Length: 175
Ligand code: ADP
Ligand code: MG
Image: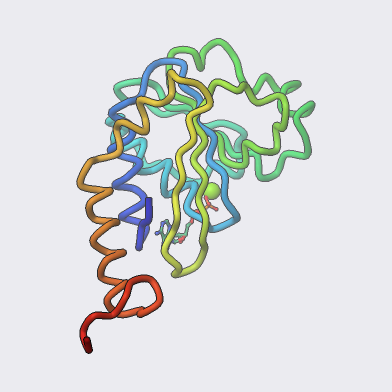
């Protein structure tokens, strides 16, 4: 998917939250400023979280109340997997809610394969390219939850780019 502003990223995440089930694990991967926290804010809205979700950089894990509890973790300041596991990062309580982990790639092999990866490319004012990858068949429901009109919107914006960019689509205007 592509989003052109933070509200777009939040809207996508909000729609995806409809697919959330207890015990889900979602890995948010992208550079600093990619929009991982924006995604978490939108996801929280979709779960009915009313508290403001902020960057959890100064706590290991923040917990919010919604339709399901939301556990928001940021590993930005964490050196390695061993440290995280020693801190009890993934514990039984999280089985009742959805866990979103920013910089989850830092957990390396300690990260369970059963998860949804949300890969966000782009920073600054650039549009974001957001890729969802289901770690197992159970997580495919998130991909099914992408609004149908989202794909249509992306297609129509691609078509519009084709008309102006020249390279992407043949320019028939002067034939
Ligand atoms: P991260 O948690 O990945 O470090 P944040 O979500 O905290 O990133 O910040 C993303 C920044 O990029 C915000 O300042 C936001 O306003 C800006 N931004 C611009 N365009 C987008 C977009 N399409 N999606 C998400 N954030 C965007
Ligand atoms: Mg963040």
